[in-house]
Image (cartoon, rainbow, N blue to C red):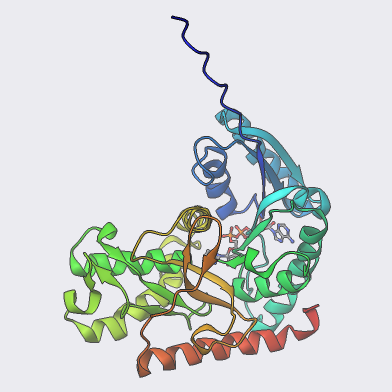
Length: 337
Ligand code: NAX
């Protein structure tokens, strides 16, 4: 009997991924992971579009040469450019990493304004040139407000497609809880990161679980939970700078990969993905802020779940971080379209 011929499996169409600031330290830890398939999966070809400012184009060429030398089978195209329109052309994911770091003597307001000059034009270029399916993850700090600026300059792109990164904070919080409880990090779930990716963020242990039980019933040192734990997560970035002499890069790149996967893959039962998304007024957060929430994805759309319990202590923490984000929004008012 003749064996029926197998249907040919269609090759997936390559997806364009734009990475800004690709010659920077996070970029250097990120591009290889995306090109190897760790972000969009082992069967998804990618075309990388690496966007940098003109003075960094030499260094970016070096990164591009190394990417070529890896001979990644999934990397089917590579574009290096300092031109926004070309950089975002056809992008399904735009990872906005490049930004101007805070320099000595710079007020937060100055920082917001400098970055507004970057993220407004990038938002407009995304709206004009990116793919129909584009989703954007803003990493460059201050990431919540940079995301708000870009989003408001791209009203054609639905608000649900914009994310700012709080995943590194969630990963840090999980690691801290696991170490304190003496369990594997995989046992820790449902830690929420509320608010701004800054020292006012609130890493929420009260709704977290360890091996399926409330974290606060496994860790009986409640003074640490409310004190040392929260500060350790809030100050972890500064601790890494003090130890390494440079800010976190590989862990940030890893959190970018996790963030994207947490949007395109279903969230595990009993867990949440930390992402700063547009507020629709959930948990009394003012509408329109780009706010760190617990998010649950079904792989194609996401929502902020109900049912997170917030006691007076947590409410106060949320009030502080909300206030900071409102102040940031006020400071960049003229940059919002
Ligand atoms: P680097 O200074 O090493 O790299 C930044 C790169 O961005 C540079 O190569 C620079 O030329 C480029 N750049 C600047 N303006 C640009 C523009 N308009 N278009 C394209 N590229 C541009 O910084 P790195 O350590 O890589 O950090 C990048 C950003 O991530 C910083 O803003 C940093 O504060 C932020 N972070 C955010 C985190 C988060 O969790 N949301 C954690 C890690 C990190 O601190």
